[in-house]
Amino acid sequence: MELDVTGVPERVSTGALPGWDDVESLLHGAYERAAAATGGVVADYIPILAAVDPGLFGICVAEVDGGVHAVGDSSHEFSIQSISKAFTYALVCQEIGHEVVGERIGVNNTGLAFNSVVALELNDGHPMNPMVNAGAIATTALVPGVTPTAKWDFLQDGLSRFAGRRLALDVTVYESEAATNLRNRGIAQLLESYGRLDVDPLAAVDVYTKQCSLRVTTRDLAIMGATLADGGVNPVTGERVVDESICRDTLSVLAATGFYERSGEWLFEIGVPGKSGVSGGIVTIAPGKAGLATFSPRLDSAGNSVRGQRATAYLSRTLGLNVFASGPHPPRESRSA
Image 1 (cartoon, one colour):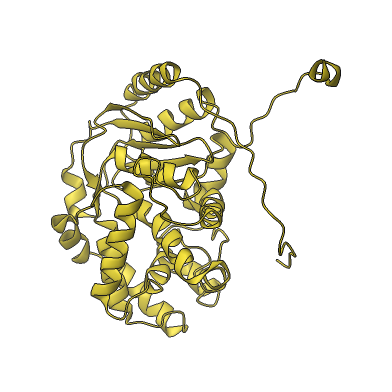
Image 2 (cartoon, one colour; image 1 turned 135 degrees about the vertical axis):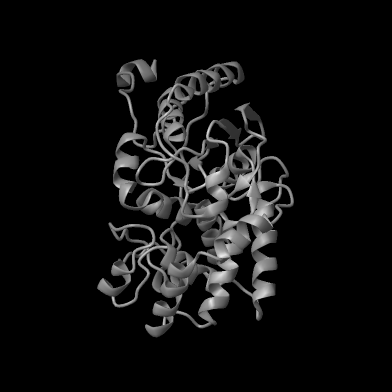
């Protein structure tokens, strides 16, 4: 798009969450409502994920002022999976810029599955967006570092800064995924054939597999989301991780593509940018307010947590998170009185 906004400052206008006690009460209400849902199945195409306890369920809200609310299994560790795509994208944008990433990766929804090869072929090898596997692998390939080890160190450090603590690699998950990621290797080699990768495709897939295998908790994800909600400053550690403009770019991409071919439905029903992962995590970000994370391993047919979606929908409404929700203002004469 040809837009001239050079030198135009961006005004930020967001609301606030209800008071502490109200958030606590609503969080427990969301947990009780969503816990009744027993549908869905755990992911089994990655062998290690098939062994997870399907009854695990946690919710956490991290406010931009550093307050953290949690309920259920919010301290249980699980692999971050595709949720890592959002934060890797932010880190890469911070390093090489909005324009380069926009041109190389794209920001438009494919309308197809997250691991689609057809989407690449239909678009002359262009990944289209960083939240599908092709775009995520291409984004990881742009991570600074001469060697795969250097790239991995950069990513592990960056995602840890988002979380506010050192995140560890789940070696068992990594090895399980590395043994079964033939499709991702094929996608990377197809990207190379179109001239979309400047590094060894298999090395890029290996680093990508590691980033998906980092261990996080629901609390970690909520704080990572709150960092994007707070203009790139981790509200718990006070460290700036990325610039404000990078948060805006990342949330824009998440709004359009964070739930793959279901992104339109998610935005229509829930109205908050977010990202899901096949291990059962969901993170959503309410700009200027909070990061919200859920974890429950049972997934629907699109690979999104059944309980997580229900809890997020409830909290989006009750906490006032929907970015499209509005209400009438008082008459002008009442405001001036």
